[in-house]
Image (cartoon, rainbow, N blue to C red; front, side, top):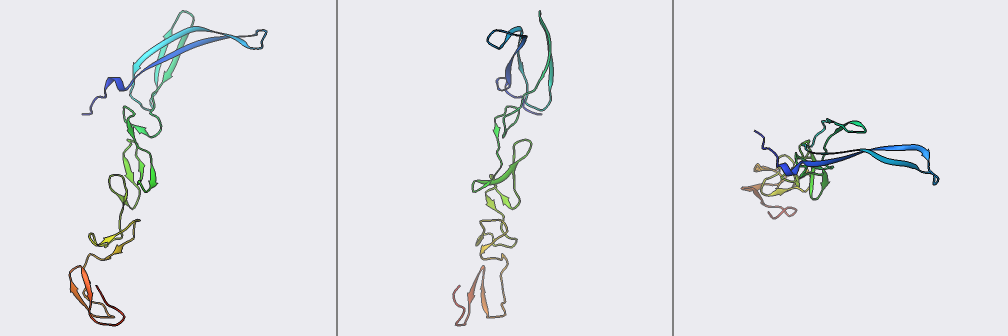
Length: 170
């Protein structure tokens, strides 16, 4: 069951003035205007695309109007307090869904989509990447047992070169 929103987060007041504009010009070239009906409406409305219809019957005019409450851009939820702005930079790589939740762009993961998804097979401890699909460090998580060029001794995730002037080290 959905939690009901706090009452003070969604209240509003609408002030509506019906103005009569006299079409005859006054000496300075402007029209005369006067308020012929005033309506004040306070209500509670959850933000959404649905229009509400309201009416007012006054002494000088009968007014029908519709209204809706929308969140400002990049704000979501029934209180318009949840913020999500799409980004694709060093602080994150995501877009926002209709509820304002972050959806990682392809190749990114993490709470703010700031961690690149490395190339398949990249070693989880000794390999790394800064952009999706690449791998630096030890490439494979499997142990390489044979190379055709030179013989290697398998010592776990590290490979030790075993002879050759051109190849040496770990």
